[in-house]
Image 1: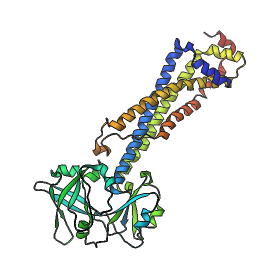
Image 2: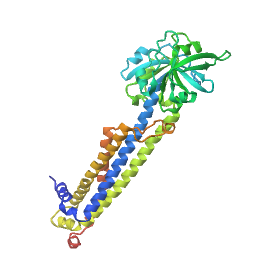
Image 3: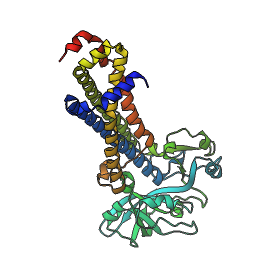
Image 4: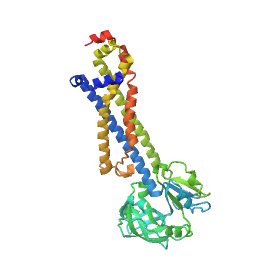
Length: 409
């Protein structure tokens, strides 16, 4: 074993540290490291957890990617998807793709005797992924569309149900308007109630049978308004997709879930800035405390430094000894910080104790993403950066004269 590491371990575990200033200094250093670890773990796990949860909610409801016609405009009434070059079979065979479902949308008004609400009616087909949608259901079922005839069940949001005072199996009249034509009336039965916590979805989206939209939009039986494409990994949303683009047709284009709701995407991007800022601040606090610990330990052990120099130890060996000594002091703080931080995060993950207002945060509880790589990186990163930061203040040792140090009290 090398001398600096051996000697640093000897003084770190020496009984002399229990009855002098070192004990107080060591406790302060360990507490600062533990607090830094706790705050960093919570910041990263909840920050990236929120980003991931919001992305997943957007994507699992509307698809990770949407294939639309280039004739689409800002209206919520979808244009007919061009079939020239469109090959859904080839898209589903791409390894990263989990599923594809067709849809068409049209705007309308749901009306009761006392209330009304503007809606976007999203017509889905028999390929609708009801298992993926199940996480949003509060009551009832998702649309069970066979595409034979007209399916009269609709699944509405909890917000619409509350605004219109509707419950399961209630009937609701919906009005669809067409240019230069009489309004079209449809009577639907509420078969399900969902909640995504995404305001733009919950305020207006209604799921039903695609044939209603085809009839209202004068579409042919095989025509659709778009495709929802789902990936196996939600992080694939923002990657380039040339393998999909070659199968979507010449007059269609791809829109990602994050592009569809740019205001939410901009809000999510703030997380990266906040996470980086908090981590930097906590790192600075930890480094300052650890440097103070090192300097006080050097001053306290001036006699030992002088004795080591007298016995032939070089300045670099003594510096390495004290840096190792300080890093060893940090280890219990790292363990304590990880234990407390992970315990708090696990409690939140499984019990959802801390609630949020979904109108502001798009989720109802603080989400937690426990990434093992991130957890390990925090501890290792703090150790490495602290070790590097200790190099400069450790040069104080080279200024200590052996003769004066031995006489120092």
